Image (cartoon, rainbow, N blue to C red):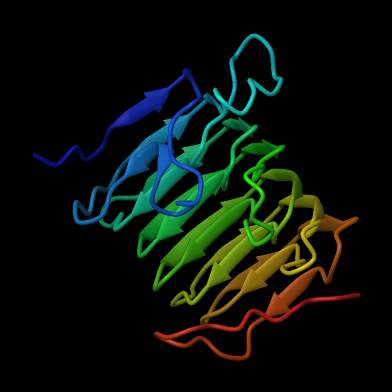
Length: 215
């Protein structure tokens, strides 16, 4: 039975997921093959306890991402007004999914698992129609918002992204591939590389060589 139109609200969630599975393993997860839509994740603290926003330690820290959505299609899924921190992987990872809104979230101290390529937010592998709006991202070894090997039609609006790219390999505040996307009214500052990278190619398969973005 599909669990469409589920709401997850006002919880502190941490200590779940496996490090190294950024897009498929999370503290909150939509697994492959279910095509679940209509999920609402709002007003949660994800990655640490609600009473003290501090690192719970490697043994208790979220090993995966905050939210990992794979094959999410159908009704709009909304991830809004959450606080993400002290995760080994992404705050939100979206894989092969459509019609996702990520808005009003605060992201601090994510991607602590040692992988220099991990972004704060990412949509990959054919995802389309993802909106990133009104989010604050402060710190990640990879890009702030990454849309890699996607179909496009994304909206990136009214976000503040700072202190990303510390790993030195993926250093953009916003990385976009695909067609028809809009990047509008964002504050992008203090990052290790360019504000925006627009990919010149969007291969459907095989190895992809990320551009190494520098000032």
